Image (cartoon, rainbow, N blue to C red):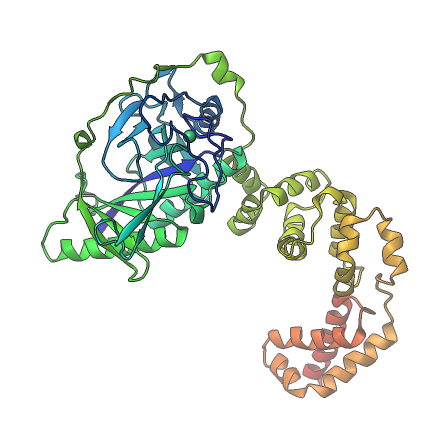
Length: 478
Ligand SMILES: [Zn+2]
């Protein structure tokens, strides 16, 4: 690659407050159009906005988690544009005095800090549904749903300091988890409560001068973010290689063709004719109030803690992506079990039941889980058969040792039977034996597996494996 990639992200997160930002309408995702609307969010004459304090509180939580500087005095501005999803013909947003600036998010996996430029609060727009065409101009008619109009939205703008598609994806994922752990948004890309635009430009390697940037809009999934950025890198580098210049513009991502397409050349900021919102007082916060808002441990902090446990990225992300399982992990970890054994159990047997909605969190028995993991690690139990009782083990108050004894799940080794079975397996599988003798270690696993199947829980894998190796070595000597 002869070019450096420079990416800046603009992320919108819908806050999951009870009410909208400036009126008393319910803030909820619903399939019934225009259910939650009133004169304020429809922009009817004479109606006046009033700021929602819960939205300020959620905003402060997010700003704190992102190490931002929260402004004691800021204000709202009108951003004008004419599109039917905006009933007032302007959006109440923040322009020159955003509620928070600076800060950033540390990506522990990549050991990278992504700096933020600003984060501000604004209202969301409604939704247009174009019938008979892809946009307003081509549509036969357009339906409007204002349920979303006026929903509190946080806009987070990074500095252009993201240098690869991996960094962009990791930033967005960690930001999503951060909002989720703070409980300020449900951050569902498919429902639009998390949205992302990307600015991307290419410049010759190690050049100080930034290239012409292109903004990509309509990215509504992580997969599309990765695909759209990769497509755009390819497209722009081909233009630069041919000696032409990239045009500064806004492009959309088309899922069907898997390409970006030109939407419009970029509007300049003054096109929006910003001016201070006359219907709202400036927003003055007091430091005591800001200090009184506390936040829980963030995913970035958890991540760094888990690195110290020697967990790898897959294991850590598994925990972080399942907040309830992450909480459970943090309870179990106070026992003296190896962190990795706990994750192994949660990621396999437990996750299987969890994904099938078979976990009843109210009844979960922490001590049983700890004992079960210990027993599984000791290899003294018939692990395959014990899994059949896992639902009971997880939910019932039982003496787990008694339970295992009762069900005959402790392995009672029968040495003479083991020897007989191992001999049988060796004589029946001459091909695998030959393979092993020629250095194919995989063949051993196959032979041990066959013997274990035959022994049905009457032997430990280690015993069988050792005996098998000794018998096979005798072949070499003879
Ligand atoms: Zn309303």
